[in-house]
Image 1 (tube, rainbow, N blue to C red):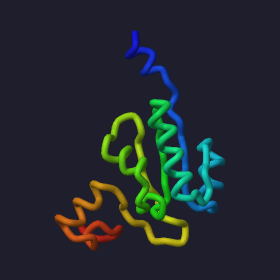
Image 2 (cartoon, rainbow, N blue to C red):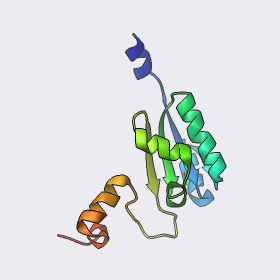
Image 3 (cartoon, one colour):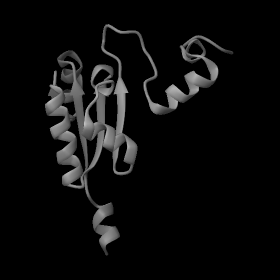
Image 4 (spheres, helix red, strand yellow):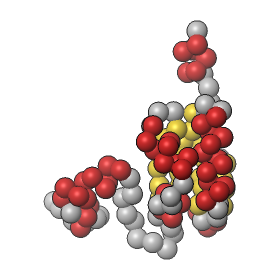
Length: 118
């Protein structure tokens, strides 16, 4: 029964990052936190952890690269909170994840850029 209750919980969709990106995510139904401070990001992730919420969280690269304790904890634990990042609108696309970092270490970051390879 507890598994059924857990399965039926809604997944929150959140975006934390620059305001120009926040507008687009807000239009598609995400709860947004434009230009958040590190303290605000930490608070949001602590609330997700404390509430045992299911969540899909998109961060801009600046936020993802910040040294935020609760974000580090969520990324380390994995599970019901999925975190992904997107580049700023003015930045070139870049894969930013733990997997991308490992692939870059193995194959070199230039091999991961669009248009390279076969």
